[in-house]
Length: 354
Image (cartoon, rainbow, N blue to C red; front, side, top):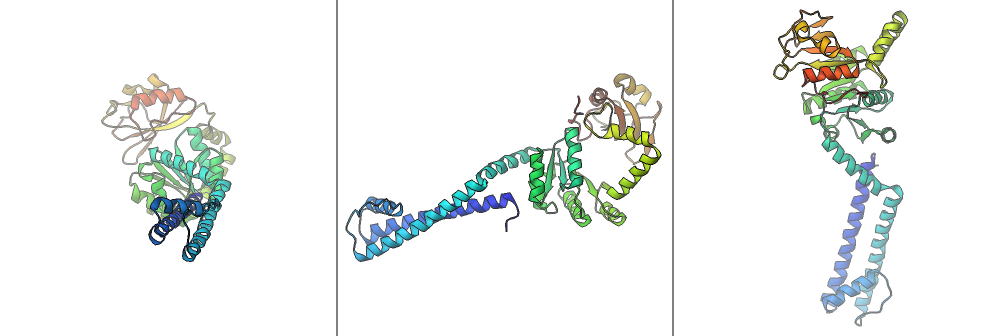
């Protein structure tokens, strides 16, 4: 049983190659027989073999004895069976669209080889589809992995780069360029499979950021111990958001409006201060004049040791490896990006409305 289109294409390809090789062996056998056994010139032997296999109905070039005629009968049967097999495989390939699939796979392979700094979504269920929509809205490059053919076809129909395979296998992750990826999102329904994905991804690329989905609180702890940089439980997060919608509906609407969607007026972004490339390191916010130069607002600063400074004032000093969490319009954040560049691995991505 072949589970992927790629495997089916490879199977048809191998069968056509095997049929062609077998036909070549039959052609060689016939030529050698007429040449060595019947004693004909090799040109006549080859010609006799070809017209026999093609069943065109030409007569014998030279008289044949009973032994030669019996061999010719066998040669005809072998040729008919072989050619029929090749025609059958070729017809199936055309009807099932395997040749078109082969071209698509080659294009997909070249595209994946060219990806760098991309995101990987493992699982194209309801959670994975929503993640893909948000990534598309943010105009980031990403690849979707799913083991189900139906899910892969849905992703292709929506214009996503998709790959059918088992995301828990190193081979699959390598094919989608995990060693060059920025982030991997393990969004499979199984906590165990998500843990395997995180472990594999971190082994193949220790610098990759791993986000994992968890169904239980126990799974959250195990995924964190397994190396996940962030673990999201849809049930816990959903409960918190429902409580926030009941208690602080306007706050929740505002936060949602600046975090998700393609038609936003305000955006939130994070900027990593490079101590070598950023000239503002060591200055205070007041001296850096980020607000007056760009109009963007610095909401918080995460120090390299993990300390979070919320609502920093003008006397707050910008330190090496600080992460600035800022809010503003697309144009304001783009201006801030130019001042603070180079930033995090997403620095080439701009908000879609820019």
